[in-house]
Image (tube, rainbow, N blue to C red; front, side):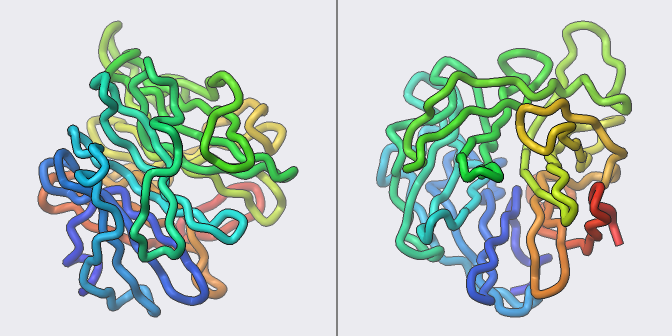
Length: 283
């Protein structure tokens, strides 16, 4: 299969031992009631395997509604999937699953959602600080608070429980380039992902809508950790592409994202980027 043949949203690539594992939201009905997630594999980023199911959400009672944004991180030699599901209370939350290898099958690992139970949350990503402390960076949904936010909580070393209260990093309306909307109109945050540049700058990439188009955004921490103030940098993509992440392939750096943001047509796209030390830029 080629990338244009793969109909997923929120594409995430894990490079493990020279094999690339591609995960994403099954795009049918925007990822609702889709019964879980698949993985595609490649050794050249061009030719991809047929999908292989790597998590069955129905088997664990997690197919209540959304099955969103799986991303797999290798942490201390083991494989952890972060994904968003609808909780029993009807609110969305981010869970952690675990498997012995990146092909799965993944099984629930955290005791329910790690994001606050009473919050509507999505799109958690794993960040490990320079001192080795794990954090969950996630979105507090605009559907609940109007002006969506990106927040973080600290995790225990086992990655199965939160050990802090949530801290807000910024709101969707805060960038200088954000639309100026009438009071009560929604501002969206989704798809956070952390990246440290070759000079040690900590970047947070995320997505929103500007002028009604899906965009890929970049923010930079003032102290190169989550406690810093995040400065919003110019948009990376402003023409209907987003929910990105960054991965390395040999000596090249790629931004993975989905485009267009139209159900039934969305597919992964890999774009070369450059790490200039201070930030990232398209090549």
